[in-house]
Amino acid sequence: MTRTPSATGEAAFLAAYDEVLAARWPVGTVSTQVPTPYGTTHLNSYGPEGAPPLLLLPGGGATSTVWFAQAAALGRTHRVHAVDLVGEPGRSTVGERPIRTVADLHGWLDAVLDALGAGPVALCGHSYGGWIALHFALYAPHRVRSLILLDPTGCFAGFRPGYLLRALPMLLRPDAARTRAFLDWETGHAPLDPAWLRMREAAAGLPSVRPVTGPRPSPGALRGLRVPTLILLAGQGRAQDVNRTSAAAHRLLPRAETVVLPGVSHHALPLYGPVVAELNRRAGEFLADRDAPPGLS
Image (cartoon, rainbow, N blue to C red; front, top):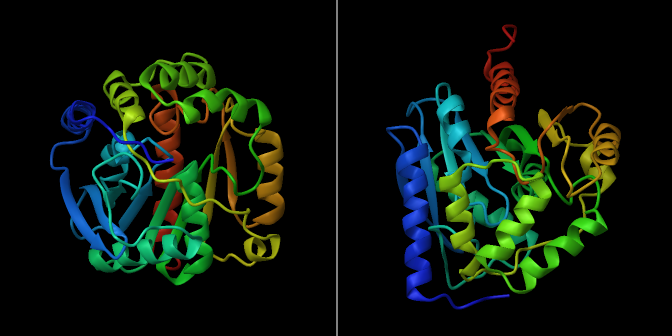
């Protein structure tokens, strides 16, 4: 559902967005705009210019700013590009050609990678961003060097009914108070970064485009995926049953590495302080193994 924001609300969101970049992202972060047939895509990038590219896709409503801890850590060895999803809150803008299908998402990401001039990339997504990343890897495995999925939804198991019920007020009548109440419930009142939380609450009143959704990837397609994959699941997440999700991932992607991160919820990823070091360690080691020349990994 599309909502019309007030100028004051949009200004407050952009100020909060810029605050997160200034206060949390490492010095040297560069913001760029990439034109695509589906609108202009905003990226926040950090890391050595010639390093292997790592593209980060956030969950719904989280914006590219949520990846500040990964940018600082993984940006030592990779050129990190964190993306604002087109149609979601952020600094990306919707074009005349809307994203309405999974094929449109493929075309959008193709255009982003073409504009970056990137060869095969490491692709990482959280939640809905993980769903997009997995679908893209199945569509264009030649463009994905490695794949990291952080508690991806709609990929291996369905949502818990209780989660959807608790999310309904926020989805039907979004505002800052409902957003905060929902995040408090799902995270168990975990202390999320205050600057990012202000931005997330300010995003609640902004217009959004109904996200592209669809069925889970077919078992046959998943079993045929050859892209090296790391799946990190939230041990305390309320969005989906972690045991069922882990078992399905093992069954459908037997070559993937699946790890449950204890003590963290779905929406606390990837910025919850107590788990950041372990998340970054596992992601960094996985990427290093895939970047190493043959015979040295």
